[in-house]
Length: 98
Image (cartoon, rainbow, N blue to C red; front, side, top):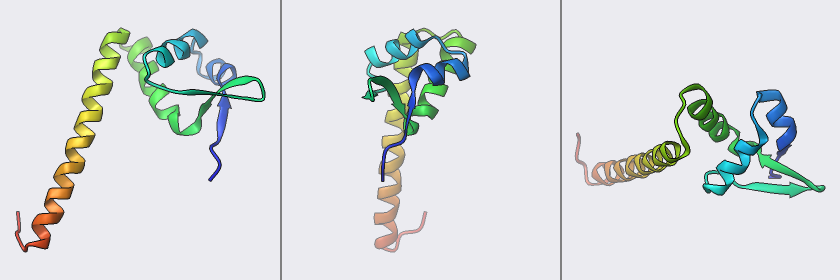
């Protein structure tokens, strides 16, 4: 499946986001940008994350340190949920109900 891309300047214009915010997110390793046909682009798969980070930053006035901490906590929660699901599957295999 081909990775669909959107040009960063187009995305920022439509969403009223400063393009330097995308640079900041990339500097913090929260997103990855790509270059296609000489223009910096974002993967469509990253757009929900960029939107979430922009709401935190612009609407909730959370600084980058806070956004980074929230990102790591959410990622850890996802990992723990996957582990819980895996353990529940093992319990079902052994006939345990919970």
